Figure 1: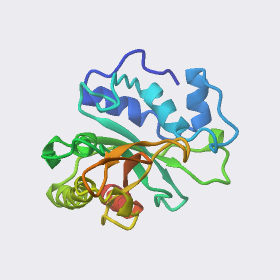
Figure 2: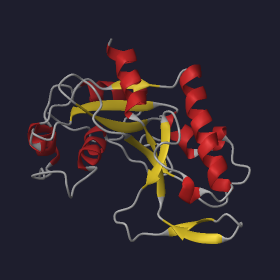
Figure 3: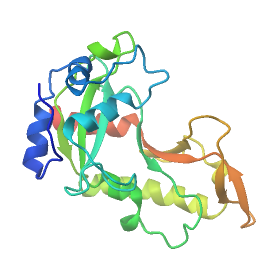
Figure 4: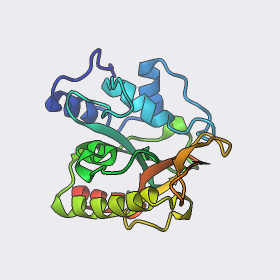
Length: 224
């Protein structure tokens, strides 16, 4: 295969490039990109996503932008099992833990990231070596009215707790489809958040994640 030499200039170009990945292994794509495949993903989490970004010509200049900012498209890999079911939650973006007063859903980074997503399902079974994992059929998705309503409800619930200084009371059980979890390279990383008395405190960075139940619904919607 030949990798694109430029960032895609249209949705059609992006989808054409993505369709060409279906059926290839990560090893085949890595070889075309001149990238060494890791023996395992324990210390290389996110490697598959970075590989596919490169393979599709993503050139986002800022992590707050979509991967294909000119097209308004975010790229998300989706590890699946042999039955096509998601194996893990999907990271969306970091959560702002200060200066959140007055922030609305329509202006949130979560909505921005999920407004249009190119999903790339990939064999995520641990017993299959990274280089042998096959890429399934990518698909473009935007939330319908009901899906956006569900995501918005979860986001608003979580942001209300953050603004009230209850960040440390939020667990992975909060949110029906969107959850907030620690997001850092290690447990020593800290960031500033709002405390219960309105003071600034130090806590672990958090990220928004889509539950497996949500991405399972998307896969069923696309491939059923």
